[in-house]
Length: 333
Image (cartoon, rainbow, N blue to C red):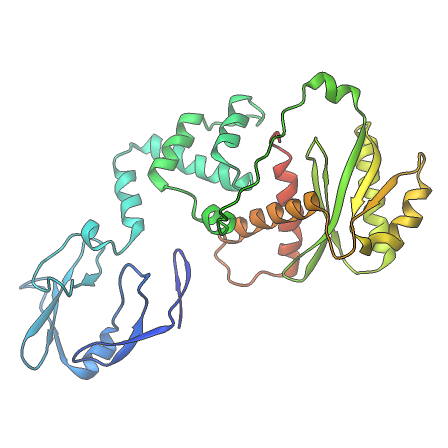
């Protein structure tokens, strides 16, 4: 059974036998398991008298079980302590109640500020908090009313961003790759105008893109491929070449898979100066390009989890794939 919640869809694959009721769905990862009032009324007599107490009374053969009203206005019962009226925090029914309680501790100006801070984080493609605060400190966003202290306050009120957690979280591996790269001074970047680009293809929900990442500079692009024909790939390559030319950079070398061999053999020699092409070994891929695809897909998944939709149209997926690397270029690598 799939149940849509505020935190996303929840899949339950187990069944359990509830005494005096019947076989129902069960999920041990869930904070609580829900019983339908209609199903309960089919089996047993259910009464409710708000003048006496705010509780549903289920009349079982040998006892009466009370479902008391919680602070979230839902009705629940702890099977380990059926006679106890427990609070919202103890029941842990809705994490959103904790957020509302946190907002009550702020004044109106602070509430509006934390909402703007979280909206800014979503608008910039859910970057890391350190990157977001660095952009604010450097004043790279014109007329930005959000301050770094409001970013920190929003993190305390709302907690970690749900879309980022779902979209960027991956299975941990015991052996991690240590990145020994260092930041290059601006003087060296100004002297080096020849760049090396890693190139690969990528699909998001069957929508095709050509992605690139520049070595050292880490400038990323994702260009939409409407049809898998040679002319389309040549078009996006010409657009990419123009982007670097406009920035006074020359593409010196391209790293790509063997599948681009027939395309690159003609396109690379047509440029002046000729662009060198380094192909990956058979049955292998370019590591830098594969990592670039993975990071872009993480950002797209994070955007998806912020949307109230289950299925996305192709036009929306297209612009999500193109927008993710563009916003990543806002931040220094």
